[in-house]
Image (tube, rainbow over all chains, first blue to last red; front, side, top):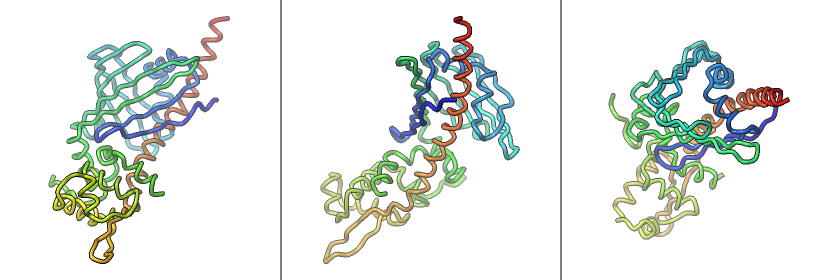
Length: 159
Length: 115
């Protein structure tokens, strides 16, 4: 198995997170792995549990839903709606963590190919108010993106 | 639910853009409040108010030097924020590592189809 790179996470502003990762595969394959239920099941939970359900209705206005049973035994579910689909290039979809149904995040997934490699960027757009509320509801665990603009830079500069 | 005060912790304290600006300025070195007022182009009471919030969560330390009070950043309370970002990065890295494995298989299948 090749390790193509590490994910980088940056915080462009108060309400966004940008995740970038390179893959050693052409983008139509990355897109396929990203959108095919039986393949999603194999990677989406990472090391944190087992994916038990993946529903993908890949059309504008179609819904998606992923369910995972975490290693600790509890169930975690997310769902959303596809807003924009450009096959092999770009997906815009909403995302709701079902334990926090009031917070809707909009994710933009962009797949770009160079040579045989693919760069995936994920732009996570929160609404500021929702993040504040999520923070207050859950302490430091969730949704603290708002607070982090520039903060890593500051932290790094002080190391 | 009652809203937490803005001074409750470092997360909230740095949610305010002007306070982040102050931290960015102090990150380059210790400064008196007058410096901050000049650099930010806002009135002193506003800068002092933000400095007070930052001091209350421990993000800024102050010491007297003659008649001036010198402010500097204390990065320790930033660690939970830094850790949060790292945790987020970690969970995505795990996913992507698994995705690498799936992609290797897809590539092998495609190569097989071509022959």
